Every structure is written in structure tokens, then in C-alpha cells.
Image 1 (cartoon, one colour):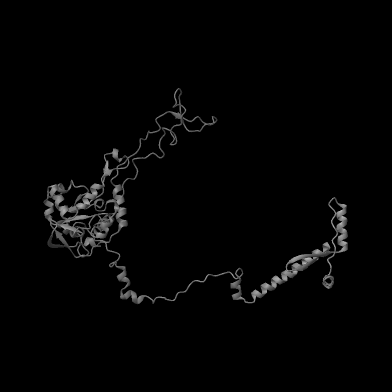
Image 2: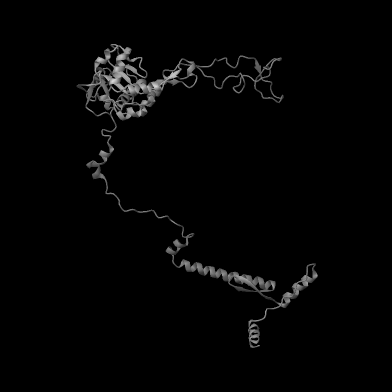
Length: 415
């Protein structure tokens, strides 16, 4: 919201006259883009005209279904013969020359009712947004060299009758760059609007708001992008085109002063609208940084926590050995003992199996080394080998004991 108490008045030559006008209360109204957008949408719907296709379209033919049993779809088909049209599907929305799906009707709900208070809230928000330079620049207007926002001119501008004079005023106020930008955006419309008397489109320029038309409309009407409105008939579609707030407004002095009588203030009721009060802002002070630094809020706050506590990831001790060792240090010893017991049991099971099969195995460092086969076992193996068709196996002799090996080595060394 614009918080300046006074606004300077400029002449048609772009010079400050030295007089100032009090800022109307409507410029301090809360800016609600959501309300402006919804009201703008409903107002645009109220300008629509009903349209519909012909009720007979797609049904102006004699067509009947062939029924079942002919291996074709049951869609109605054109009767007759001697032409390509006979036998073709008709009536359905999937058929050539058929009707559309859900034909449009003229009794659709075209228009929308808008609450009067909501409509007034939207126009107040749109007017308040025109007094904030940041929002006007965000809308795309070139106001870098404009002396002041909102821009108020003397009532002598209302007596201008020549376009040449109006162009001179815009040049003196450093607004001609805005008009040139509008001219550069003039282009052909995309779509069928070109065939419906809406061939060209262009961007919106400044809006001139006056109190009395003493020739000002005739002077400004031929300048591209400029819109003229009487202050008594302010329209949201002109002040916030597209539902976006922040259009550049040029006010005459009398029109600017009349805003308080139209919309009233928080101390004085409106003279033209019965029982109407300006909307109250939700926050009286929107400066959040100043609010947070205030003594009242600082006293209520607790001191900052400078100690950093990091979250520890919880691990499952049944799956993570290091976590299990912290909980139970003896668990590592138990695990080793369990592995040793398992190893011994495995060895016993293997020895029992080998004894049943008649094979002796020695267990060393986790590997089985073949030590020898008993004579009984060897005889059974040889008998099985000789009885079958397979190749006879060589007899397996016992390995010499370790003492005999040592004696042989000593004899060799003595020789």
C-alpha cells in the first residue's frame, strides 16, 4: 500500500506546480490479487453471448440400424442405394457427417452473479496497487524516468483537444517510451479471431482517469495503448486487465481528489455508495523484519539453542556386530565359541559318514586329506569295479608312516 501522505501535482509541461494533494484512503486498502483475479474472471464471463450448434445437425438423414447378424456394427446406416452414401454410418459422434458429442445448447449458465462488496473490494485493491512503483514495473510498464507514482496532473489536461498536444504531454512526462513499446507489440492475432473482425492485438499502455471530459478523450483516443475512464465509472477490466494488478494510471487533480468521496475513508463514510466502508488490512504493519526486531516479540522469544545435537542413526544389534559388542561385550566371545562348536560338530558328522562308507579322512586346516582305505573297503571297491564294465581301478596302498620316512632320509645321508 502507498503510505505517502501527499502527492505532487504536475503540469502539462511535465513540471511540478508546487501544489500537493492528500493521498486518498483507497490507496491504503489491502491488495488481494486472489480476489481481483476471481472477480475479473466472473466479469469477463458476463460479457459472453450464447452460442450453440443447430439442434438438427447430424440428424437430417434417414438412417436405421441393420440390426444383428450381418457382421457389422449396430450404428444407424443411411438407407438407399446407388451412391457411396448409402450404407454409411450416421447420427453418431464417431461417424462422418454425424452430430457432435453433447451438442451445445443456448441455455448454458453463461453469466455469473458477483457480490457487490466483493466487486468493490477488487476495485479498491486494483487502485491501491497502481500506487506502488514495484507492482507497476512488474506489470511491464516503463516508468524508470516518470517523476512520481501515482502520477497526478492539473485539470488543464482535461481541456486538451488535439492529439499533438496529448503526445507533447506524454513526452514531457517521460512516458513516450511506454507508447513506443506498445506500438512495437502490435501484431496479428493467432487463431480464427483474424476472420472475426479481431485481426490485430497489442499490449496495454497507461490509463488516463479524468473527472470531466472537456476534450481529453478526443485528444488521447488515437494514441495506441491509452485507455480513458471517468473516475465515476472505474472498471476492474480496465484498471487490472487480465486480472493482474499494477497498471500505470495517470490521474487528473479533480479525479484524484474525488476518490475519497467515492470510496470513503475509515473515518468518513462514502458519499456515493450507501453503507460502504473500505476493507481493513489484515496487518497494520507489513514490515516483518521490523516486527521481528521489536521489543515485544524479542522478550517472548527463548534464547537461541547454540548446542548442535545430531541425530544418531539407530542400528539393529542383531545385524550389526559393533553395536552388539557395545551392548554386550561378551557377545564377540560367544560368537567365536559358537563357530568353534559348529566346526567340531561338522567334523564329527563327517567322520561318522566316512566310517559308514569305510573311508578314513584326516581333518587339517578345514581341508580333508585322504589318508588311506582299509583292506575291507578296498576289497569291496575292487569287487565292484571288476564286476562292472568300467575300467578296473588300481589298488590304493597305505601311506608310509612318518618314522619310516625319517629313517630312509638318515640312511641316504650316511651313504
